[in-house]
Image 1 (cartoon, rainbow, N blue to C red):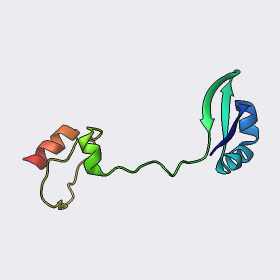
Image 2: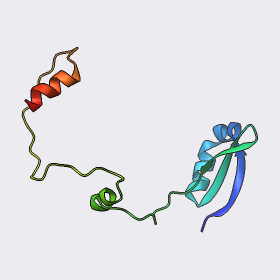
Image 3: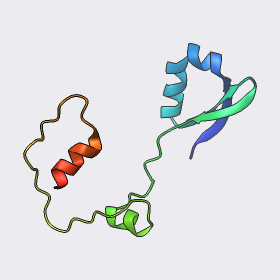
Length: 95
């Protein structure tokens, strides 16, 4: 469980950033304020977050599943001259 939050101004954070990063690593959450108003939180990395598979991400529409069904094979590199428009290069690749 995280330790209670401490409020710190952006100037103090700049001056003592290593100290506050070490505190965050130890589990303390630090609320960073700009002009006296809370702006961000510095805290420990949470490792308990669930990891999602590509299939799960595609099911929730967080990503678009690839249309290609077979194995991906690299083609020979395409030489493109400087100033070539990307749409023209793609048209050449796709045929």
